[in-house]
Image (cartoon, rainbow, N blue to C red; front, top):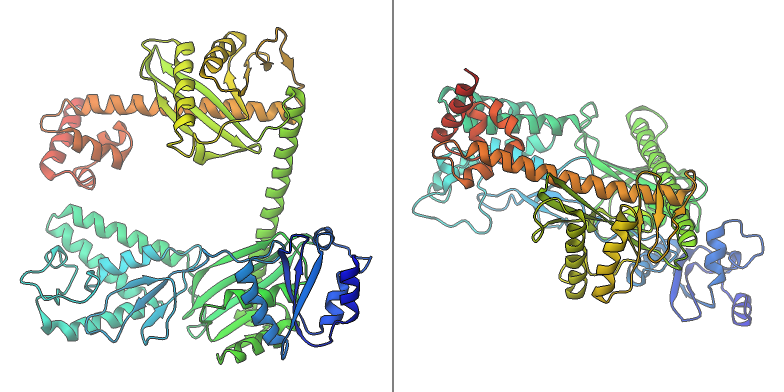
Length: 600
């Protein structure tokens, strides 16, 4: 503790307020609230701080400031605003992308539409949600669009001379050409709201009726469309709890910790239906569960309208959370249930939080193991710093469809977004050395141009699959390019590592994490290359066989392959299933007959 802090501690007031910790660069590193500033701030500078992360934060404190507030609730609100503004390193920070979608229906309009929005507004519209992880709002909107006759066109309703395709296929009342449908439209809107409140039976009946009607007309494309929507509806219903009382409109919020990290888990129930849930794991545990939970509420509900009831698992935080909502003139009941349905929901929420903490622990252990493997490899190879590793492999069959792969590991972990694959352009026949030379030439040229983010970062280590010969050929090409990059090869037979300009290989014991890391990298490059090669072979075979069918062009073949993924599935498909790829019925019948003739 420096003299500036020691002097300030003597003059701290006993009022409630917010304290702001700064480092030697005068950067804010932590913001907290206190009922009693004097008692709270002094706690940080005692000698018996137990938690490592708190000690780490305190070691960086060079000065602090404070702001006095009228009460603890004002301190909570001010703290949340300052955290959002400054984003201190050691504070609980909720990500900006945690804006959950709502379904909005503007009942003030004559012919409202279904909208997906991210913000609630006090505009008189009906809002349903929020829809969290586990419930896809796009699935719900798809079902509504297929079952109900509401208009899909956005913006102001324009009265046209003729309606769009949705009226022709029976999916819209077309108020743009028929203003007399207002009464029917309102009835349809009422059914939509009932569906969003949990009435699935009417929607299921409508979709079944439309599917059966399409079958009777032999309109198989539409029949399959409605069948898929029924499956989509069933998937939505399965993900929702249906045994809850309809009057429950609650957010269930539980705070749990495992001694290192803290997790706030939230479940959302509207009209007795589960709308999903989410978990927030905070690595920096600088406070107890009460402080974590109240800080979470201040940030999470800063720009969100709460439901009529909030269920929590920490009774001692109940009063402060109640006052927080009262201060915003919002009528919210805050409860800590001990029995019945709400208690079961709370237990579920706690369980989700505990599961999230366990996953965070496993992930942390794996990251630590990966880090140790990289450090060990760096020491064995004599390379001071290894962060980005790239491995390459070649795949072909008898010299045809030559391809290569580039896989990337960052800090010992597979970085799938950075993977890339290459079709070999300049090499004919089975010449793996030449294929590798082309691959590395193209990769280093992309490093020079920086057109693709995957190629824009220089690797710390390049790993070639093979022995001394493969390494020598690749290393000469690397030297000619003018780049100074560490390169090694890993031979499969004895798992020996070869280095350029060194006769004897390095043999790493099989139990060492460094060798397991190299094997994972090599095997991943092989898997990625052979998967691409097999895909190209399958594509070529599919195009060759389908090309024999009269009238079937490249565009139709592309649609079929996109829908069915393989030639075998195309062969087995019925006419109705073939149509779902987007081809017309005449071509579908030709394909069907072609493969049935082959079987006779």
